[in-house]
Length: 358
Length: 89
Image (cartoon, rainbow over all chains, first blue to last red):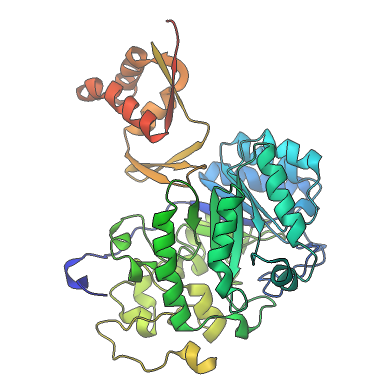
């Protein structure tokens, strides 16, 4: 990174409401992915009822949330999924659904086809059946590809989501190529965070993260207008694309800034990958939790960051992944151990904490 | 004559001094000036440019922007925020 002194990466203003909310609608899941952040499997008996889900959807609408990503567990295991989606869409909220693709019947797919969903995202963590099925611990590859084909034929926009780990890193290029071949308009790479049931050794080395972001930057430019490449990890990207951080929208880690998660039991957390509970919608409104929870407010003060993140000139446009910091150190304000950058005010490190642990 | 409505792919809200418009297909977020909110409210498919100008001035008291409404609608249509439908008055 050069030329940073001439660029302003100053403080950003937090949003009055989330731009994006991730909603784990159920803990029930018919797969058992090795890296699952929510330890999904059995349905949680305390899950929000249909009426509570409808009320939650209305709160998203009232807050002006622009996009709700329905995740799980496996969302299609909730029998009331379609009416909940309809409530969001009636309020003109953009909605996507993420599924493992194991069981999405044609009648549900047909219902989705009439709803102007943003997209149906199917998990594909490898471009080959053996690797994908071993990650999902289910025979899931063929049904995932089949679902993508069926959905596209019915006019549903489709995407692929991939969790990037040591066991599938070599396949990321092939997976994006598969997304192109299957006519997907979207591919999302989720960087692995060792939370939930995921073990730490699935994580990549710091060098691999740098290599990935450089590859991803070029791939994103190559596919612009055909396949939208996204990652919910906006952190670190400014290190490979200095212009990116100049955009006043860019805030780096979005947890508590422009993103929140609603869990299946009504807990609100700043991010899918961060198990810090800011409140529960059974006792407080979502807007109140967003505006005044100490968990949310604490994340919005980048001057409190520690280690290299606290000294970094990019802290307002990156800030490091707070979920990763929490997962590795137990401190949500600690430095992001995946970062390869040594800030100007920081002595170069021979090893980052992540490399030491691996 | 062109009648304008907000694209069904767009979700928008006022954020401070700006309007944020999110396109659910492209996943792009557009930042528009705060006056755009009044225009987007009016773009329900029932108004052509003349009616939009009148409605906008009534809602915002910004007569100085009157002549900018039609080119702005054209620009928003090119961005995919609005959809223009050609039909008889």
